[in-house]
Image (cartoon, rainbow, N blue to C red; front, side):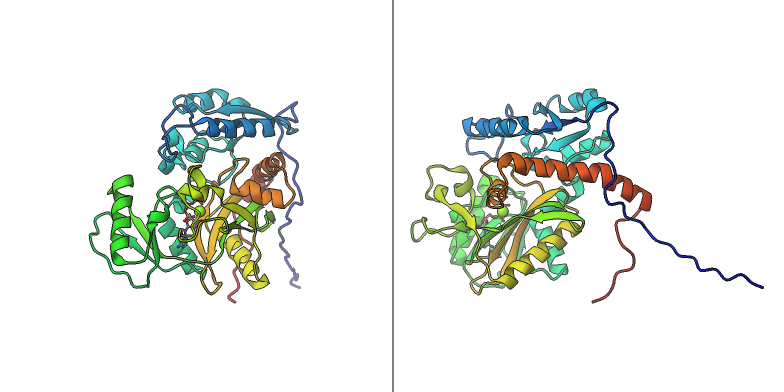
Length: 382
Ligand SMILES: Nc1ncnc2c1ncn2[C@@H]1O[C@H](COP(=O)(O)OP(=O)(O)OP(=O)(O)O)[C@@H](O)[C@H]1O
Ligand SMILES: [Mg+2]
């Protein structure tokens, strides 16, 4: 008689695997990588690190000093970064990658830091090089979002060699560098109400930032200007911080309501006094935005933390502006403001990023390696 057998297979997900510890030490040796304060930085108004930037770094060090379970070393000399990492590698548990300036303070080389760390076999906090490459290119992210059914503003992509283009939507519009960060190149002059103004805005961006860079012209959204912060690694474990919106009530009449370069970098500008406040949104709008952010987090391969910028149109419909997988970490930045609204101090915010990364590095790495997959099986069509 043939024996009848039922074979049952299952995957057991470990609740919490124990941390991989260096023998004899509970304290993690963490190297913090920062921008190089001795090199030019084209994003900053005077192209160098000023007192404010140095104060920001001091605030970071002060915040990290009190965190238990970590011993921090700071690497910011990019000329010796590779040698320094190689030399210290055996003693590094992981790197806290806070270099949002990019290698040598070049924004396009932001991805070089995680790429270098991967080549050296050093674990690190935050997103990988592929994700940073995707998200530097706003047009690319727009395309991915569109494919996922996530709303984005109308836009035209202008190549460096284009001398004419067709605008298939109405004024007002905003022109901005397609490869951008920290609102570099986004000023009140980028907002245009006519073809003449738009031509001038594009010429100005090209003159200031180079004729070899693509430009994105988007419909100008005039509703709430929103930002969403996520710390963690969805779907397993994550926190969506309270959504914030820019408060434009103190801005003089007649100035375009945008939170661009003037608001982030120019203390003498009327934009300098913009404040971020908790966003008041209809429940459904907030639910949709959060769901879309989580989907984008996964699709773009964000890790540990990220910030998503959105804006409502005049009718209150949310549209995605951009994804920041290596968002500003400053004590007074957007992420810290959201964290504060959630009741997290600046040190607690940094700690939660570190803990999230630590859990991923020491738990999920093993899990993924053993299953060889991230997914849960065959997807269902809805
Ligand atoms: N289509 C748009 N409609 C209205 N405002 C816009 C639009 N695009 C950009 N802005 C304004 O410009 C700001 C900066 O834009 P965006 O987030 O795309 O640039 P960024 O350089 O990546 O900024 P950062 O990295 O500093 O967040 C937005 O927060 C918003 O105020
Ligand atoms: Mg932004």
